[in-house]
Structure formats: C-alpha cells, structure tokens
Image 1 (cartoon, rainbow, N blue to C red):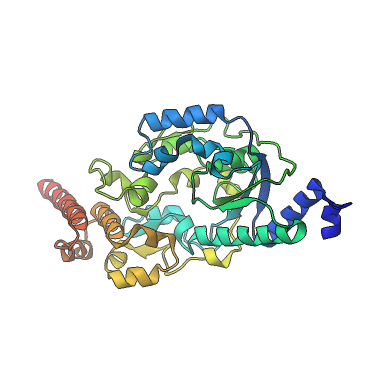
Image 2: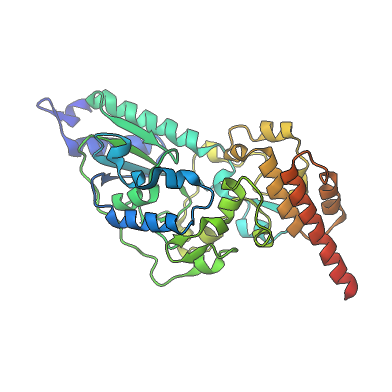
Length: 368
C-alpha cells in the first residue's frame, strides 16, 4: 500500500485519497469527501453574521463567541488546506416507529440519534484510527479531528465536499441516505484532490417548514433556534417559555419531525454500528416510567449516552413538560404530585405548570 501511495519518494495525492476512502469505509463510515479549506466562504460569513444579529442562536453564546472563525479553518488550525468530511448512519434497524411514539401522548419521544452511545466518542475514535492509518502510510502530518466539538461549520464543509446539500431545515441531505447520519471532520494540510459540491435537490418542497411543531424554521434554510425543540430540550438550561411548552408535546430530548417528514429519508439506511443500538428501551418508554428514575438511575442507565450531558434536573424538566401535555390519568397526576416539592426549583416550576394544565383541562370537561 505504501508503494502505491508513494512514488519515487513522493506522495501521490490521488492514490492517498483512494486509500483514505477505503480505510474510512473499513472503519464504519458510509461516505467520505474532501473540500478545499481555502474556498470562498464570504456569503456564508454574511449569513452567519445576520443570523447571530437576529439573536436566533438564543443562549448558545459560543456561537457568537467564535463567530466567523467557523468559516476559516486556517484560523482554527494553522496550515489547514483541506477539510475531510465523513458521515456515519445512526438510525437503529429495530427502532420503534417514530410517528407512533410521537402520537402516543403517554410515551416519551427521544430523538433517534440519542438512543445509543454518545456519537462524539464513537466518531472521534474512528477518525483518530483513520489518521493513524494515514500516518503509517505517509508519516506525520498536521491535522485535527472534530465531531461537533469545536467552531466548525459541519454542514457547510460537508456540502462543499459533495457529501450532500443543506436542506431547508438546515440539516445536510443526501440523495443516497437522507439525513439520519452524523458528520465529522479532519482538518489537514495534505493537498488532497477535492470533490465537487452537491446540487440542491429540495426543489419546491416545504414539508419540513410546515411540520415543525413550534414554527422554528422561519424561512427556507433559516432556523430560529430559540423556538426549536432540540434547542429547548437540550441547549436551554433554564426555564422553557410557557407559550412553547404545549407545542413540545412528548418530545423530551430533541425533535426529528423535520427529518421524519422529508421525502429524501425514504432512502435513509439503518446503521450497522452496534454502539448506536437502542439502550434501555428508550425508543418506546413511558413518560411516567422515565420520570420515576432516581438520579442514580439516570447516571447509571445513561452512562455513555449523549442524554446524560443535559443533567438530571433538565431531564426531569423536559419530562414534566411531556407529562403536562399527556392525556390525564391517575398515574400521570400522581407522578407529577410526587415531584411537586422537588429540590430543584426548575423542576418544581415545570411540575406545577404541568399540574395546572391537567386542572384546566378537567375544569373545561366539567363545564361541558
């Protein structure tokens, strides 16, 4: 292999690229493409600045802190000339059908990417192994590995590399695989041949805008994170705005509606990665059952899960909202009452709101 990559003592970029592609597939990545890190990103920077100026990033201060460094790889990793983007499918093959869970108010819906092991660790580990194979072939080189872990505009670089195109819901879409996949990158100084960007195949479709429960997709390709359920249940650390709570339904960690409705996801491929298999029955668990977990159970059962990152109080906050939106039943009411004096004022607030929802509904029923 080294002889094929190196000719007359110099590295053949095309041969190296083919080898990198082969190694990536062996390591469980479904696709890999390469973009020019020095590509013109001025229009992207303008759009990012406007998005930040509108306050659409909410409490995600890190978005504003790093600003346009996201579009300039050389400022993050000096010497970077190429961005290697990879994708790895995450949808478990035996997962409970998503719409059936969303439509059952007693169940808790968890975004399908979070049902297994934390993807950050899985993808970074695999990318590191890929880099090690590259080093064996060509020696040491300058690089840095990313997996949703630094100021990197993953979708933009993946789009420029030809992995797919940015959909109107702002996620990356692929004609071959829909959008149920993770992205990760390697910034490097190796002058590898670059790939052509993908065309946009969204056409006139606006299903993702129409299905969004909170109208967070305010225009094609423009997301107001402050209204997005993924932001509200994961990124937002404080109180969820009361006006948005009823719209969240039973979505207690993330939201997949815009992906589930997308026609391109009929091509979504189930993952073959054991780390992304469903753990603890989280694809079809009741709100009451999850709300009964102690902190020790939360920490133990969700060890290695991305959900554990939000912490126990935020988990209970989200579940309280789900229970407030659930059909009234003795078990739902009792579960909420059992936590009405929770040590966390954040949890208490959302529990009291949830109980009030049921009281209001009962009053309306009595009047009828």
